[in-house]
Image (cartoon, rainbow, N blue to C red; front, top):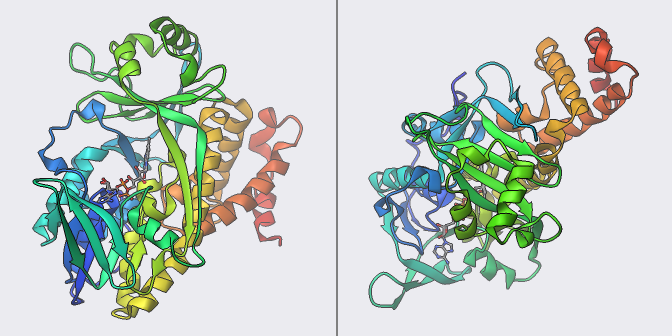
Length: 462
Ligand SMILES: Cc1cc2nc3c(=O)[nH]c(=O)nc-3n(C[C@H](O)[C@H](O)[C@H](O)COP(=O)(O)OP(=O)(O)OC[C@H]3O[C@@H](n4cnc5c(N)ncnc54)[C@H](O)[C@@H]3O)c2cc1C
């Protein structure tokens, strides 16, 4: 099945009237602006930075993201998925690099189920182009400083030319302004608004594997490469220009940490010990290591997501999460699609649309945030563990025998549009059953003769 083949019904011939301000022209804000313009609204999109379409992107230097089913579905509903597909590289599974440089491949799902690597900058450029073509008014160099939530007024400092202050009035203000959202800050000043932020002890640093001298890929391009090392890991995702963007996830402090990797000798010693097979592929390792920042990873949780039927949050602004399930953008795109479906159900009653949106999306984003945190342990540690691999094999067999009853958690999250909260619930039930299955003696030799039917029957137990 091609990505995004399941198309949700949003009736784009059903149009509305009104003014919408979208704050933040990142991935989620740009997509939201397109959806709202196609629903007939007059949309003003404001972004504090300049126009990313004017920046010449160097593939290997931009974060790349894994696009999976949920983002495809949101783009498919708009009819823009094919345009994006021209800019992605399929990854069919994880390629695990052990400390001796030995490789093993673990498919993500069934034949034909892949996730897709895309440059974040390239995707952002494409979405902005489509937004402009759809009639969205783009305002770059506009830094939002405050939002009057009751009246839908946003205030900006315009940084492009001479510094000036402007304001925009709208029927609805959509805060797609990321993890440090100004719209959320305005909500934080209102009564009974809950908010938490949690910084992981790990940070990340980006590095590059350029193409080989003959211009070809230095590693298998159709895999997400992982060097799992227990408390930390290196990963690499392919770019269209035959390079790979690598990300090193490492604690900020402690024995093996960014803090202890300061000199060339320390960095080289660490890489020789931990990732010896990566060193010959990274000719700019030392330069990049010293030049590129170690960035932090934050989880944001808050509620409510809307105020006064006039303002709402979407994407990282209300649910920034750690990147280990590759779902942050996917979840943000799903927010946009579901918000628009609710608009068709309840529009133009904004209060009803907004309260249904936050009721529906909050538990789902809590679920994927929880799964993202848990997947860090799976990626950096368990993927190299023989018991984990055996468990995956047994689950794959169960899925093959009973495709509608037993669906591996990764498949529910990545290759379906099932609610994240439902995936988490079913995943926990399967986890409990598998825990008992894995306790059986001699499983490594006998797993193929397990009584799979009785394992499936346990799903019906209360
Ligand atoms: C290392 C890493 C890897 C990741 N990998 C994946 C992956 O594989 N798959 C996936 O789905 N997700 C992934 N993510 C998550 C994904 O990048 C985010 O969820 C997504 O980019 C969020 O988009 P957004 O538009 O909500 O926020 P942002 O991308 O943060 O965009 C917010 C925009 O608002 C603008 N802005 C902020 N404040 C203001 C202001 N005051 N006024 C005007 N404009 C403002 C910003 O300049 C920015 O352009 C990853 C994240 C990281 C850090």
